[in-house]
Length: 213
Image (tube, rainbow, N blue to C red; front, side, top):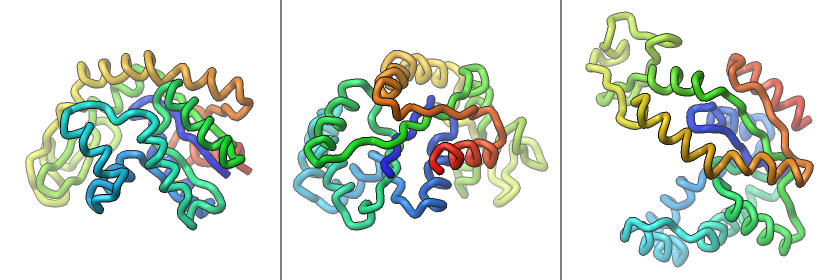
C-alpha cells in the first residue's frame, strides 16, 4: 500500500502519517529526513543534493525522486510506504509517477487532510514553544498553567517566526498555488480521498483507517 499524504501546513498530515505507519507497519518517509540521512552519510546522491542546497538552490525534481526511489527500494518498503511532504507540485508528481511506472508500481491512495485556512491560522499562530526543552503548547487548546511559562522546565515560551500569522498566511498562499492542484491530479487517477481535518485527531485517524481498510 503506497500512500501520499496531502494537506496544508498545519493540517496535521504529519501526525496522521505517523499513526498510519504504526498501525499498518509501513515506513513513514519524509523527504526532509531522507535528505538529512543522505547528506549526513555522504552518499553519492546526498553529495549531489548538498551542492544545490549549499548554493541556496532547490534540489531538482529528478534528483529528489532518485533519492526517494533509493529509499523505497529498501526492504522495509516491501509492503508499501507513506510519503509525507512529497510531491508538492504537479511536475514532482509526474516525475514520481513516471519513475514508479518503470517499476510497475503506482500510488494507491492520496489522502488529503482538509482544514480551512482560518482554522490553520488559529492553530499555528496559537502555538508556543519552549526553547529550553522543546515542549510545545497552544494558547487555546493546550495552554500552560502559568501564562508564558513552560510546565515542564519553567522556561519562557516563544512564538516561532514560522508560526506568526503573516508567515502562516504566506505559507498557505504558496500551498494553494503549488500544492492544491495535486488534488485534481490524484482525483484523475482515481486514488484521491479526503478527510475532515477539523475533527479530533483520533476521529480523523479513524476516518483514514476506513478509507485504507
